[in-house]
Image (tube, rainbow, N blue to C red; front, side, top):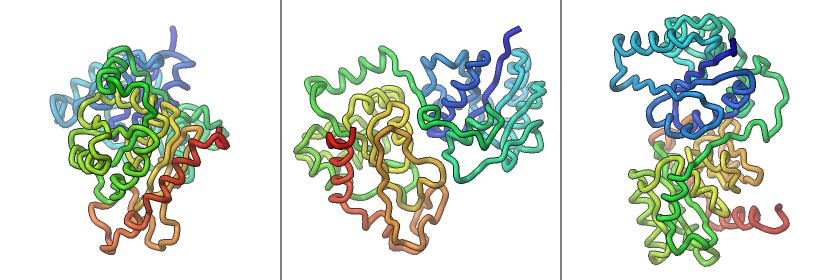
Length: 338
């Protein structure tokens, strides 16, 4: 009987994108189903290596013990050979056990490790995509190529059509995508409008983000005298990935669009302030550059990015200049950098 694997990944959206190399690896050995949040489930729609995306609405319809028991029963009926705990909470580990999955693989540092039958070392020096892939290989020291670590997403006809409508007559323009948002306030580089002003003379700026980023988009539109295209809140996650794919370049904070660009292999300039790429969340596109203030002893100050700068000066972001990012962008797009 063919084997079937279950991945439990109910963490941030970026984590789901970085889980796709693990999905691809396990799919070489049998069917792969993924337990995810409703929002993250949309990211793996159309994915050829996912047999089924199972939504676990742990804060909504499936909250509490009733929802937990219902989900465990549904998973138990599928008779998985192994579960891979890409999200390491106690609840996720307990869910794999309650589902009757005998082989349960997770990180030895995870909160839910008591529920695992195999515990994998999580090397903080590795990219998070490599850490997640190690759950499947069960060999954290295995050398993997950058291509093996690159995430994969698969926008479909509906996403391509949505981007066509958004761009309209600008569909043939050279696009520079900017992603100024982040749920963490200190990870939002404040000089995107000035950068947009510089780049708008060399192509059409398009602003990527959700509804919450509309104010940031308005600032960029004002800086470009209305020439920028505001895509915030207008596209699904996969359609945003398609828009990034069509762009010559993405400039982004340390946030979800960075990982969308990695999946679409779009040249990427990533701005890191309170965080650093050494945490394992840097860009994986073939052409990528990282901007960060390397002269500060207070950096990094947080693994996610605090709501406010602990020292009150926020120099890690304020002192990164638009000129420096424009230079990185132009260098990435130079014919000298194929």
